[in-house]
Length: 156
Image (spheres, helix red, strand yellow):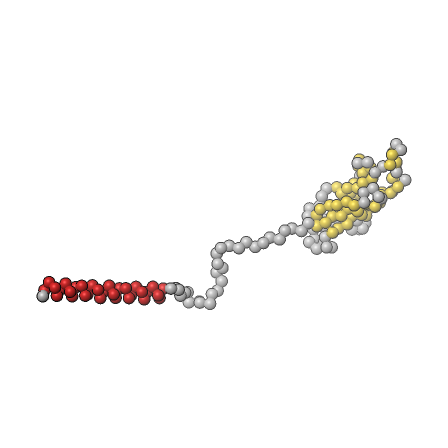
């Protein structure tokens, strides 16, 4: 006769995200076939169970015992170590959710600005205004000179 012990290990930083279940179920298999009913593991039984008085051989062949977790635990990945050595450890590792990066829009924020009167300087506008005034003055002087020359030529 032999015995098989299963221990549930949690790799989740002491349940930091608060998603660890209060219990899980495990199933014993003999040569790949379920043996008995699933067993519930909890914190109260230190996440451990031992099957005792198990046959070592059947028809002269050694029986291979394995243990699997029944179902899956959301947010965890399962790994099983120590198959058929009498002490099987099933480890559930927490799979952290990916961090959502904030989306950056192309629009500026509507926060407070240093200019609270609502008027903002228009850069480059003063230069254009001066050039326009000078151009209009030259045009006006040219028109006046042409009119003066025209009057003098045809009246005179």
